[in-house]
Image (cartoon, rainbow, N blue to C red; front, side, top):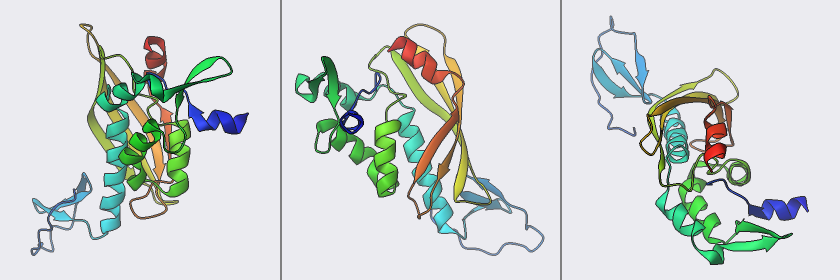
Length: 205
């Protein structure tokens, strides 16, 4: 029964830059990180560890995609009766391997995850923050990603705007951790605190 449930998901509403090579004055050793790049002596240069850039880019892609709603292609899938089946008297969206939904999510996310990481994300998290409603829009306004000192972990904070119809924009911050044991590949992504965004989405789904 558990395995069958995992086969079908009920989804709610379901840089790299160019290296600038130059001499950096010895007295200008301080640096800060801006979207995966260091700024030294007023010049943006590529990080020595390209792996950091690839990891950050993978995290950014997944978070920006997750926290953008609505998704037109997803809505098309939801409006196609052939993408649904009946399980124990309940209408369920087909999500098994080869289904239209699985192929869509795989195209969006698979290149950015480990094999097991993608499978877990697909079952537990994908499109949790996507609504069916076209009247509700969610978009990313800002994103901060910081590598920790151990366990291949990256802490992130995503700032999003939530707008329903003509109502005023609500602002939310989502905090979490992504683990990348392989270069550019996410093994796990966990949302620690979303400021009540998911609760609001469930209420309006």
